[in-house]
Length: 568
Ligand code: HEM
Image (tube, rainbow, N blue to C red; front, side, top):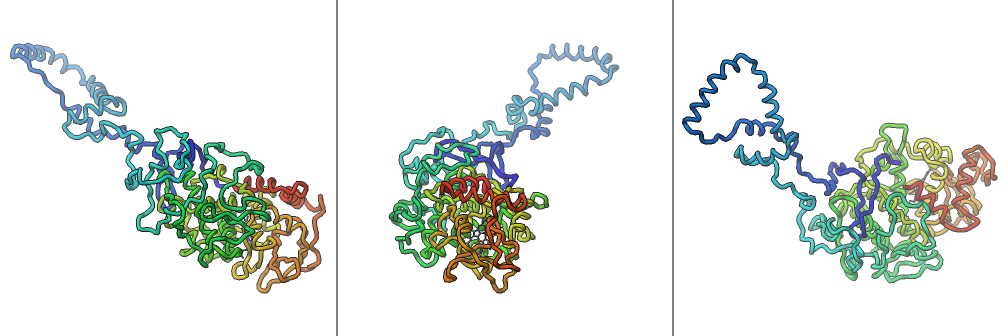
């Protein structure tokens, strides 16, 4: 969706994997900072820097000692030749002069220039006699003894590194975390030592079929189906298990303070910008904040809110307009459609904003990249068996904006599939399969009367609203939904059950599988589309909906695959 997205490359084991821009040494990063690829030298090339200095070179030529007789003979010879030469044009001179100049031009004769520069002119050359090697390239980062920076990576725990030794390792890179800040850098590592090495993952665009059968079970998130996920000691492997209350007694307000019971890990951010360690670090921070939220409803709102934040950032993409917007770390504060984000998710005191401002922003990590990585973290942690790990399809290098006026107008409203079609299919250029898969994110979190006016969860409980799975489709399809008329809302929504619960579906949700077109005038008319009914758009979304629901196999795989395709 963003033409400026950058390819991620893996360059070795976990400790040395760098998410880098392909074929680009320098990347303008958000907020005017420059993410410089340290594999390119900052040393200016001598070309074009030698023009005036070369004049001095030309003027001075050493003279040898000549005997008086030699001088006399020479003078005589010169005298004899003078007449002939004075009659000819000085012609050879321009060429000769030119040739002298060219000879001294370092751009054409670089091997001469540096050696002549200082010794002849007597001035120090502006060209370093020895160009810094790549590893000596000056760093703008504060110098910190490498030995003082522990490594985040599994290699620190004994796993061998597979990267070439010449490359700076993550453990050698200086921490740029400002001193004096609350020490986020001491956040405990939530990734167990058994985390699979990143070097095992394919580089480039991965298969869009995340494996659920043999994917590694990582530390957070439901490690099994929500119905039987085990409780794990939070000090060693914090969990956001949807079925059990956290065993750590958190403070009532979310906190990002580290506990002291786990060994510290550094807030390492590589100055080359976005590394796999950065990505992992964001994943850990999201988990840590979530684990600190006791209320399941609040926790699902925090996690769902991050995903909604990302969606509201990218859904303003319009391929036919200028500016196109898209994922740029910006949403329109003045538009009510974003209500809830500036209150609870991205505000000065919001935990996610705090961790970004203290830990990532000072290290050249762009807001849009951070949001997407945080969204990926939520999805990984809440997907069944952590199966939907979108690390290898992640790209960094989005350009942030501070203002995006009018972007809220581009977001789809809750009025039905026509709004979805206009925004997601026509403006964004997605397919119905993409749109239907993305809507499945409503399995997380909730709506709130304070914000959108639509109240409740799409999932059947606050616990289920912490799990990223296909039950959104099951819920929309299997329940009998009746219109709910919300005062002050131009668009009604739907609820189900006995009325004492908070179940909810928007028109934009139900229209994917039901005919809700006449619901405002004829509330009884909420019926399933029959297969093959309606126009081709109806058929396309019906087909996509059934693919996600995968009622035959009961697996989340089709949903996960389609979601990753659309999201990335
Ligand atoms: C037609 C498109 C969409 C419409 C009309 C829509 C509408 C809404 C509304 C009304 C809410 C409730 C907000 C509140 O009251 O706090 C909401 C929440 C949410 N939306 Fe969407 N949405 C759309 C697309 C998406 C997409 C594409 C995603 C992600 C890929 C997404 C993810 C979420 C999540 C996770 C929440 C829960 C947020 C929370 O718990 O705070 N939505 N959406």
